Length: 498
Image 1: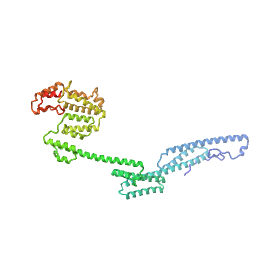
Image 2: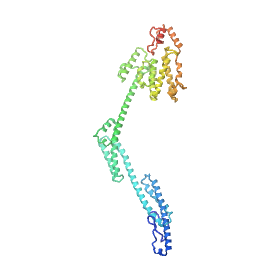
Image 3: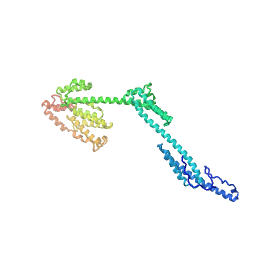
Image 4: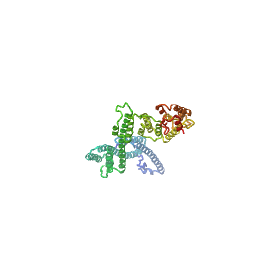
C-alpha cells in the first residue's frame, strides 16, 4: 500500500519529538538544565508550552482525520459495487488525509499523524476488502440461486425420474464447484443445497397442480414420495390448499361450460318454438326427449308444443302474473333467469321473459341493498290495492291489474334513471317529501268510481253480444273474479264487489 506523502520541511535538529500518544519527550542535554535555577525554570516552562501546543495540534488534526474517515464510512456503507468501491474508498481517504496534514506545521506532529493515519487506513482498507469479498460471494450465491429457479422449472417439466435425477445432480455439482473455487462460502453452499431441495419440490408440485390437481394432492399426502418429502410442513400445507383451490376452479369452469351449453340449448328451443322465421322450425317431442333439458323443462315445452298444435295462443301476457314476477325479482326471491322460463306460456310471452331476465341480470350486476329491496317491495305492495280499486272506495277495477302492471314499469324506469343520476332509493326516490318521489305518478293510474261504473254499464249493455265481446271483461288475473259464462255485467259487478 503506498504511503501517505510526507508534508512540509523537516524541523531543525533539537526540536522535541512526540510519542504515539502526542506527549513531548524532554531534551537529551541534561547539562543545559543545570546552568542555573532560573534557566532551568524557563526551559521547563518553554518545554511545557511546546508540549501543550503539539498536543493541541495533534488532537485537532487527529480529530479531523477521524471525522473524514467516518464520513467516508457512511458514504460507502451501502455501496455494492465490490469490484470498484474498495480502491475508490482508499483513494478518497488518502486525499482527505493529505489535505488535513498539509495544515500541520510541526514536523514531529506530522510524523506521528503519518504513522497513525497509515495504521488506521490499513485497518479501513482491510474492512472494505472483507466486505467486498462478502458482497462478491453474495452476488455469486444470488446468481446460483437464480440458476436454481431455471433448473427447478426444467426439473418440474422432466418427463421421467431419470431426467429429474440428471437435472438434480447437475445443479448440485454447480453448487459444489462454487464452494471449491471460493466463489461462495461453505455456509452459502449448504444453504443453496437446502434451497435446491425446496425449490425443486415446489416446482414439481406446482406443475402437478397446474396439470393434475388431484395427482398433486395425492403426492402431497404420500409419505413415500421422495420429492415432496423435503418440503417443510408449512409449504406442504400451502401447496395442498393451492391444489384444492385449483381443483375447485377446474370443477367450476367445467360446470360453467356445461351451464353455458345448456343455456344455449334452452334458448335455441325457445327460439324454435316462438320464432316463426327460425329455419329449423319448432322441435318435435322426440327431439326434445333427446336434449338435455331435464324432466321439468321437457314436460313444459312438450305441453307448449301440443297446445300450439291445437291452435292455442301460448304467448299471451297475464298482467297479474307479470306483476308478481316483477315483485319477486325486485325483492330478491328470483335470482336465476332460467327460473322465469317456466312461466313462458303461463302468463308471460317471450318479450316479457326477455325483460324479466334482463332485470335479474341487472340485479346481479348492481344488486339493491337488502333494505332498498324491501322498500321497493313494500311500495308495490302498498300501491297495488290502491290501483286495483276505485278512488275513495273499494270498488274493484276490472282493468286494475293492467294498470298496476303499467305503474310498475313506470316506477322501475324512474328508479333506474334516478340511480343512474346518483339518487338514493331510501332518501330520494321512495321518500314522500322528496321532489324525486316516484309515488307522484300514482294518481294517473287510479280510476274513479264513476269511470269504473261506466265500464260496468257498457259491459251490461253488450252482455248479450258475441263471445268475443264477452271476453273483453274476462279477468284471468283476478283470481275468482272472472266473469262467468252467461253472467250479466250487473250480476258480475255485484258479485266481485261484495
